[in-house]
Image (cartoon, rainbow, N blue to C red):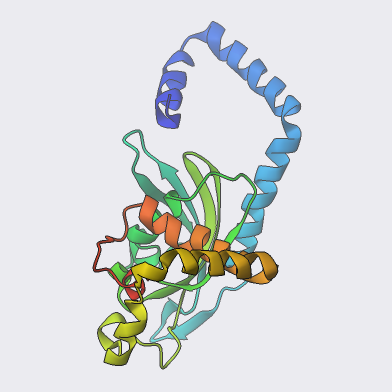
Length: 234
């Protein structure tokens, strides 16, 4: 049963005095029994909040408060139909901005595609997606459960000189389309050899796969065809 369905049912049952008393005492019992888990969750939430408020930069301009390079703390929840939604953000967005101006929906979908690992904080620097065009973000988040995520996000500038997909030089095409089928098995063997011989290289490839490529594919955020190039993934 999804979280919202449980809460709706509980809200109804709390109208019955006998059940209300039992639920209250049971909740106190569970808080005592799971005090370590509760503390870890609250510590994690406090960590993200401090990350946001600790890097606040407020500027006074034309007698209006504007926020520049602000780090925001957010929470995401998965609805009963399986859609991830941003449910809260701190500090509040500047006047005229909505929550999805701060954390785009494509970013929300991407984060939701990660494997649930309570307490593990994923960090991505200058992260972007094709649908975001030239927008990039510094992300830090923990997918605490199948329906709950905590994290921070900050808009950042893409370093000058970074080429976009439309600006890819023609001479790079040959590299992207490296596909010699007659030597494919040899390529795999060579790759495995270097990954086994050099652990840092192995760590690099698996990190790129699990943190960038796999979530994009699992979340259906990119379309891969036989003519796709590596540059189309990012």
